[in-house]
Length: 499
Image 1 (cartoon, helix red, strand yellow):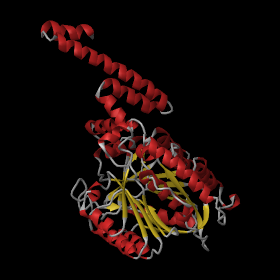
Image 2 (cartoon, rainbow, N blue to C red):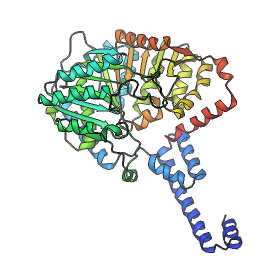
Image 3 (cartoon, rainbow, N blue to C red):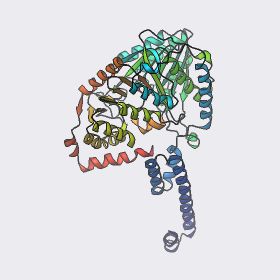
Image 4 (cartoon, one colour):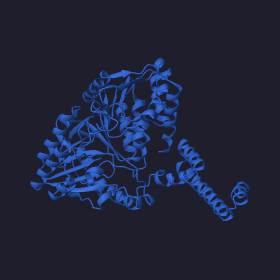
């Protein structure tokens, strides 16, 4: 290398000074890559596929690869946020030990698969299962917004919200008006919106309108160039959460946006977002309020106090529910473990719907093994996707699944954004997380597991409505795809371990 640089630049072109500078630049870049390679082995040794992909990227693109790794290679959220998170976890645990009646589900009241799945969450630091909750499920976009508006209008003490996307459309205006009405009644209203997902809202007059009306609006995880030096800027708060008076909560895949809010992009007017949404009353709402307080302190530094936590009662006819937070501050990959455990405990059938299917190898293997042992495994994904890269990477996995006997369905009536799992008509999962590495390890997500047969049947019926508007992928036809199509799908899938 030394001879080639000197011969080309110095001897043939007469640029001896440039040759020296270039040579030392190459040496410095190589030394930096060696140091970063050691760091990658140290931090990502448990994920050899990801580690090898990053090391290959470093040496294939010596300078650019190092820059990309510094920006997105590690899940750094900043030392200040980590200290805040540790503080609020301690405060929340102390408040939760404050003597409220204990409605926790007794072990004997749950089936073995339920107990096993619940333990996955608990062993990763999630709250225990709580009984006495009433849960409603909706797949109707108008009903979903009506629920949010109605609960905000009924608030007497507090309204707390987290949303990844807040659009400047009819839905955004409608929910914003409800927040202003609540603030005018003297209700404390706090709104946390993601810096990237809601960037148009954060730069709009609507933000000033809400703040002037008494709504405290905070930007979650501000994306600034200077933050790249201290934290990973693409870590996002992907939660969707509404908590009213500490006694009722709503969550799911729905953002504050009209279903067709991406009609002017890759998704046309005929490809609206299709979401699932749940409304919960009962003891588990307290745990969801804790999630809000954790995220709120991460970006504001406000210390939570016990008075911020209400005491929702265990309701007659209520059912067992567990809420599971995840994000880079937890470092437990609980979403990955929960999905894999749900697949493993399924005895007859498991149905999964997700807009982005870019799983890791263990999740793929769990799905394949479940199908081969006789479980009916069904995956529902959208035909139209707002991310070409995600769509191509998703389809790269179809072949293996189809060969193992997994049913793969592509939804044709819009962009299926609903993230649901049903297991044996015995338990239902509604989550903000996608089946991809970003949701597994990078984003802040919320997952609700409902251990109830009747609710699981409701989830299964909603999933069946998706299947009714889907086309099943045939293995024979899939294997006849063109070479060019296969190449772009596999190329996109190669990028997945870099997340």
